[in-house]
Length: 143
Image 1: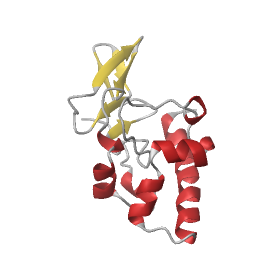
Image 2: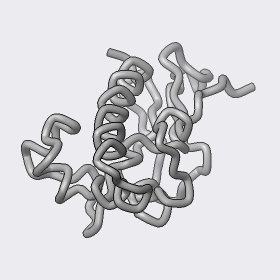
Image 3: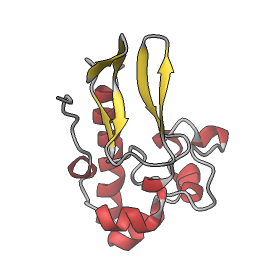
């Protein structure tokens, strides 16, 4: 499964949770709070495979999972550009100082493991939309 397929499948899971919370009368702040890692791993174990392992994707005390896929992450399943005889498939649109480009054989991918930008409640609140896909940005090929 490519990243684009994952995003679409994850968006559907995300939307089911948000619709359920809205039906229960949750407001924006309550929905953001609901997506706290500690709550999600207990109440929505199928949302993320790491929940079953009680493992966070980023080493931070208060991890919010609303934007589990960063809106600044750009990816193209066919590749974005060639760099030094390798194909780049992803990058960070804001060039976060905590991210890096990793080389994996002939592929270059953005390694976001050191970056926690989208997992802070303040960031989620700033970029919030009830429709998660409206927050996500499509990837364009670099020129």
